[in-house]
Amino acid sequence: MSIKNYRLIKLIIVILLSMVISICITSNNYILPPIFVILAMIILFIARKKVTDVLVDERDYNMAGTAARFTISIFSVVMMIGFFVLFLIKDKSPEIITTSAFLLAYLTCGLMLLNSLIFNFLKYRASDDKKKLLPRLKHYTPLILLAIILAFFISMFILRAITPEDTWLCKNGNWVSHGQPDSEKPTEICK
Amino acid sequence: MTNKIKELRARHNLTQDELAKRVGVRRETILFLESGKYNPSLKLAHDIAKVFKVSIDDLFQF
Image (tube, rainbow over all chains, first blue to last red; front, side):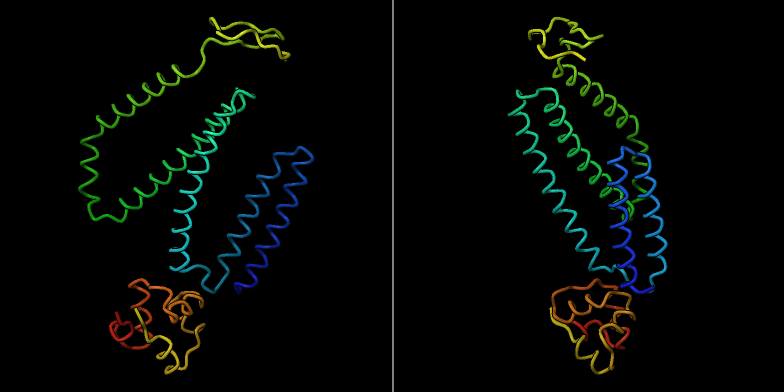
């Protein structure tokens, strides 16, 4: 198969997939879209295997690496700005906005962490010190475990400190105080 | 960095597409190489030099 035909198949699949997904979502069907996405991925994978020409080469990988670096940097900055903006306007709808702000922050941290993990994995895989590194890691395992446990408890403590424990909870259509909340009973209807 | 890819390709009667297929890259990469807008990896430089039966030093000038 030529690259031209592969690109045509790819375009048709993308158009069909977006049509199917939009139809499924408008009809409240959330099971079919992932199935169609997986099906499309399988078809594209098979089509890609049949391409005899070179689809991607080292120049593309170089550019992809640069693009990924820029994407991560831009995404992180935009998400952090979004986080602070949301915190500035959180008084309008505290719960939703605070949750969204934290979601942005955690997504950014998650992306950076994943990037760092993959980068270090690739670095380790390419390294000549693999044999030296593994026993060294084993030697430090108790320390690493201790650090993880400590980090877990510290994050739990911070979460406990910043999240409002004393609040109003909606139970059976009534606002019930949990602890001793500082704010007045919410005026909105409890559903 | 300059190179003699275009010159050698003409001498060997090879099109960009043919050379690209021989060294396992896309035609655009050869185009960028010839115009000096892309620095190849050592492997690609070696592969191209092998096609033209010259050394990497003869192919690329720093």
